[in-house]
Length: 469
Image (cartoon, rainbow, N blue to C red; front, top):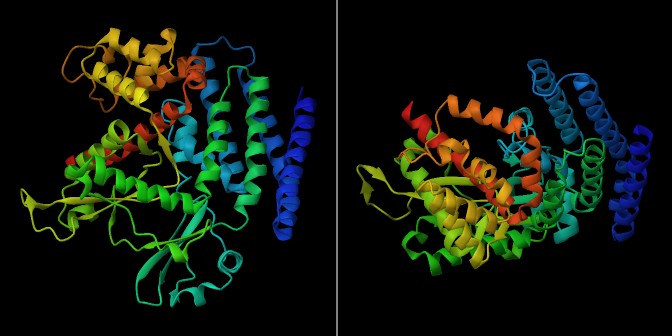
């Protein structure tokens, strides 16, 4: 079995690499793909085999559901999560993006994987050398950063899985933020997705209940869009236009950095530099005279407008992608606090929700609020969960156990600090197979709504809980 898996890995990976090389017009990029493909394939194959063997060996002879089995599975999850984390860091690029997806799927994938990825994936992203940055500029704009801009800081302000951001100043004196894609990522990304697909399929072959192929499908669809910075720029413009046309009552409270189109390409995005605080920086937000709870309310309102009214939703709203500043040119205050303006960053990943999906999704949330079990089932089925998994879908969506979801008490959707989290962790562990099946059958747009909900829940929890402490 292991030999078949390894042979399949090398064969499929070699084929994927050949396709990527054949489609590349850049000899240097082709050479880079050829150099990086073999070690990546070996690392992927070795990691998949090690993880599979660990689970088989650790759980061998143990009765499912017993304390010994639960303990062995927990430690196997931890070891495997650390191996997957190391693989993501060593391969970089798309792999780190995949790890970030996992980190945001709380109670959807095992808790051990979520926590392991969450602790590192946003903090240990690769940094391109300045020579690599210069190479991207030379290829895309035909000039060096020092020529394109009057000033360009060679040390990045921040780095993420796909790009890094540098501070610069235009020749007319405007301070800007320049997002530069990691070199050759567009070329190696094709191979990376194919090898990740191989890894997940190999594990599914060995463990039929492990079915996260939907996650690879999502990365395969979203990665090309996120790697096209001109698409990101267009999304930011469309987002603000939607607020102006469809939500004028809140439009002034939402902002996206101005794009400098003449200084942007598919791999370089030049934007207005934003002097603002990260959305979960509670002390920083208070220091500029803004109340954290007002920020929490604004975040919730902004995304409710996008989801239920616009049907065009920013699907990566983690803390690093949202900033806050006082409303410009506004002296009005709410009980002594300045009104906040939410600045949305990183517009690479958006999803469109058609009218029927928005109606069903809104109806489902209404049913959840009123603990209407019949309507919860009806609208869960409309969204693709099926009659057999509607209760599980409601639990995943609200992060509440089913008995709390249908509890008629007014605070039934309020999540407790300890008891409910512990119960949900056990719930996710016990129903791992059913959750995998649910995620397999749900439309990908709904999967991204789950991810978006988790991101927003984490942001709001940080704003409100820290403020109350």
